[in-house]
Every structure is written in structure tokens, then in C-alpha cells.
Image (cartoon, rainbow, N blue to C red; front, side, top):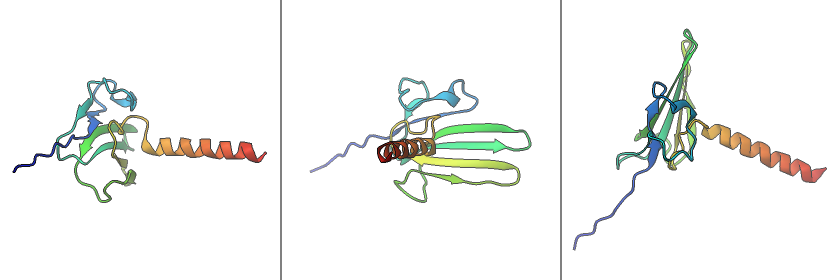
Length: 122
């Protein structure tokens, strides 16, 4: 008896700063030409933001990801040098590597929760 398991790959935004509109993608923009299914062995979506300091230029790349140090954890890693600032974020749901970063979402959620709590204390 043969058993075949169907596994659906994650879909991520796949583009670079050179692609028109790549810098303004939102998670719900699933009709974008950059929103594509990843290969079956993909584990997560990735967003890489690099700022080249000498040119004051920011480069963004949105891709599918395979290698990770901390599986299943939404996380951003920073790799900064004297010449560049780099942030690499990984996330595990379809379209999560949009222009609105994971860190921004958590910051906004925290601020809204804090405001709600403070409104009840008064």
C-alpha cells in the first residue's frame, strides 16, 4: 500500500527593490504578481533589508527561506557593520514578508493593548 501525502508550500512575496511596487506590498495583497508559492522544501518567508551607509541607500529583498537557526519562531536578526546595516526577518504564514514588518505589527499591538489597559485604569 502506497501513501501519498500532499504538502502545500507557503506563499511569499518574491521581489527586490528593483521591482516596481515591491516596497509597498501589504500582507493582504495576494493578487500581486510578486505573491507566489515557494518550492515545496521552503520553511518560511524572508525579508532582507540592507542599508549601505556610504550611499545612504536601502535595498529590500523578499524571498522564500530554507535555512534557519530557530525554526518556527518569527524573528528578525540584525547584522550591522561599519559600512552597512542589515536586518533579516523570517516568518511562517503566507504573505508575511510584506512591507509592514513583523516587528512593527507587534509594536503596534503592544501599544494598542497598553492604551486599552490604561483607559480602564483611569
